Structure formats: structure tokens, C-alpha cells
Image 1 (spheres, rainbow, N blue to C red):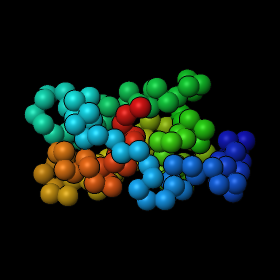
Image 2 (tube, rainbow, N blue to C red; image 1 turned 135 degrees about the horizontal axis):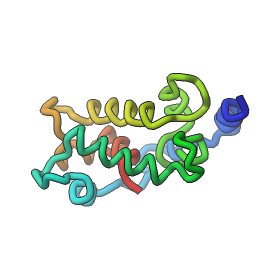
Image 3 (spheres, rainbow, N blue to C red; image 1 turned 135 degrees about the vertical axis):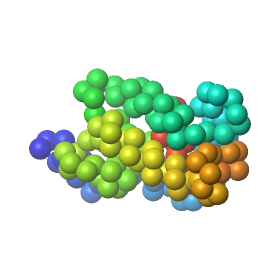
Length: 138
């Protein structure tokens, strides 16, 4: 209950730092760097499996209190409070790994504009691709 209150309080005082920034003010993640880090089979694209593997590592890194969930503080700069609230399917004020990976899958599919099941440099450079990369990389 306390975590839910904290999430609601964060939303009400506008802790939406990353998502509240005007378009174009966020630091872009270089698609080439992402491919180098995430494309484990080195085929020049990122598959959903590769994205989920990177997301699992990112989840572990973000989980600074080692509770197996991410609260609004741990998600700062990665996923804004509004997006976190939408992803919080059990409404407990945190995201567990399954909820985090569901967001990754949704964002992956949004970035896959040619619907081939992989993301290339061009797709990673789009707004949707950049939103996905924020979930996958430091």
C-alpha cells in the first residue's frame, strides 16, 4: 500500500522527468552502439529474444534494493511514472520482471515498422526504437 501511495505521490508532483521532457531534448541512444551491445548473434539486427535478454540484465541492474521489483525511483529515466502505471497490471505500485518484459515486447513491436521480427539501425533510430532502447541500456 505504501508503494502505491509513493507512486501516486510521484505522479502528482510531476516526477515524470524523462517523459515530461519536450520532444527532441532527450539524449538519443546511438543505434550502432545498441546493436553492438544487444545483437548477440551479430546479424546486424535485434530480435525480440535479444531485446528480452538485454532487458533482463537491465532489470537486474535497475533493481537496486534487490526486491525483484522496480519502483518509480528505480525506473527514473528509463520508464516514466505514467507508463509505469499503465504497465503495472497488478496495481501494486511496482513492476515485476514479467511486467517489465511485457513493456519491452510492446515497444519492440511498435518499433518493428516492417514487421519482420527484428529491428535494424533505421528502426532503432525512430522514436519507438529509442523508447525501447531506454529499457534495454544504461
